[in-house]
Image 1 (tube, rainbow, N blue to C red):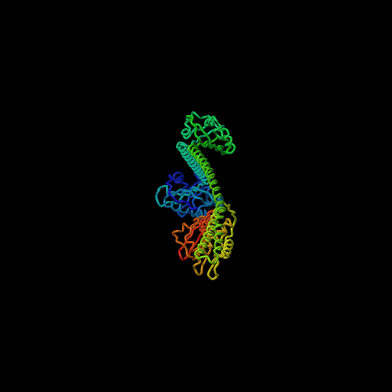
Image 2 (cartoon, helix red, strand yellow; image 1 turned 90 degrees about the horizontal axis):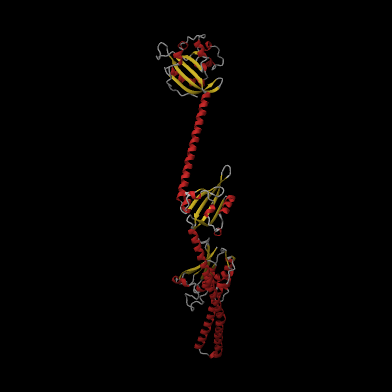
Length: 559
């Protein structure tokens, strides 16, 4: 390792000031001075201007493994004393000292016997005693003092000081954090209005009374310190589901206890509060350090809950009353349905029977006008019967329960197609009718009997209202995927006469029709039945039309 070269501004040289004769090369081995330098601490060399050795001491000669007496090492060059790594490190100091300077530094050098060691390196010029400080100089003094142990001690001390400083900084930081945490806690407890936080000892007595507790409960600290938590509970324990002793026992056992009930203010008034007791334990010893108590004023919440409970009771009473009224109405409807089913059918049968009997009585000679009137009577009676049957079906649909299961809509559609194709009123030559049916339809949960009525009515309408068109085209399909509401959507489209879109809201009403009976037969019940069935399944139904072009009926079912 190469040392750092610098002028250390040493005081007057030990060698030139105290031992001029030895430094001048006139040492006397018997003199007191020579013995003193021989055993001087550290290795000492005197080199001439060519860096040839002029004198050494005993420790310096240890750098040569085969060195003998002092006279044996004279005239050896710098490169003969040290290996290359050492003399190349020392050479800059010696060369600078030959210019009249004095230098000192620390460097790690490879000792031939002891290995890598740290040394204090001193180099200074050897001046003529008669001309001190003059140039040129006579040579250079080199002093290597082993400071490995001192350096290690110093570094260890510096490391210990650094660790101490780091520890002090950490302690200061922790103290600042703790102080900041305590400040935040104090500010929080002082700012609370409807919540109190205070602390209890392991026996449930108040150990610390905070400003938030004084604000909520009215007591000052000296009034409650040492008092048991029970002092905040009303005397009539029946008003509270959990008393203080039970709450403390539960918190000690489970770590936390939560209860609600009436608590007492200093002025004697009660307020409804939520109480949360948390057991505190020493993290090292595990010993109990008492409890923290959080008390929150819930009086307004209880008032709202009581009001809501009262409103619910009133609502339940009104629902029960309305249910009784609906049951009475349903009974009236059932009576009306029975009346329609039995009392109205008989007169209609009589009208149809007597009209036919009158036709037979008149015989072939009956006037054409009379026969036309009799036909009108019979047709009207038949239509009236169909209206009554539709009304009864609509009424029964509202009372019948749904038999829900997974419905394969493709199979249900095919069954409806077969039924409408065998209806004599809807039959037509095959070339006049084009079907476009999907190979697959998504399955949905529902009542298959009721959903088949939807398909029957929609397909029958498509065939009926496309009768004037040659050829008629009926398409059935479903939207891929589901709507945002999680629904499956199916549709039936035809190229029939259509309807006025402005009157679409009348399509699904009972007995509502957008075409005259003379144009298209019907009672106006079919689409009303479809709407009732789909809505009972939780879906919806709607229609779009462009008169003379196409009409599409859509219905959705929950997937």
